[in-house]
Length: 228
Image 1 (tube, rainbow, N blue to C red):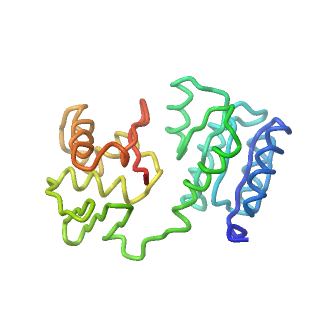
Image 2 (cartoon, helix red, strand yellow):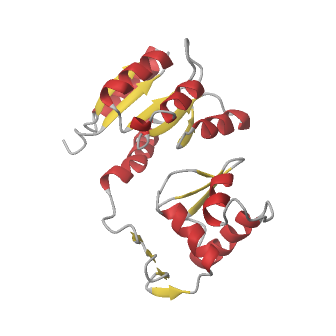
């Protein structure tokens, strides 16, 4: 099947949850591995280097936050996507997960079809590599860094430099959550003093020009670019 080369590691201490997720992702043709705690998950990840890890938070031996943090300290997993699937819905759990290096956070319960759709969206980065990273193309939107040009619905837009750099940064890695401090450092630089709301103002201006669908706010963390 078309997804047979994509490796997914499922980590949850509830056997029923593991089986439900495995069953639905297996139907899509993914290679599925499973672990019931963080320590075993790391051992398996070191062997297979998965494209995607789906993690619970509350687990024995090593919880999901610590597991994610350890994976992110290992260069072998720089390209591995980490998605949390957990019953913990508090803001501080979301923030801790993204601080540890998560790419997405989904709260249980979630319908299997929705989860499969989310997985497919996260894995697009492996399936749709853009050969020329100076030119990003999406539905109705082209961002040409070499020409410093943005074309939306066939019309070239005027985008000030910082707005352009912010748009390009987020769009260069769709679905990835960029934390506010990382955005600030990459777009404005670590030596430049700007207000806390600077990023929000620039995002608002971009939304006014190309609509709300491309930029998603992750409360308490930052922003991500999504493909409508």
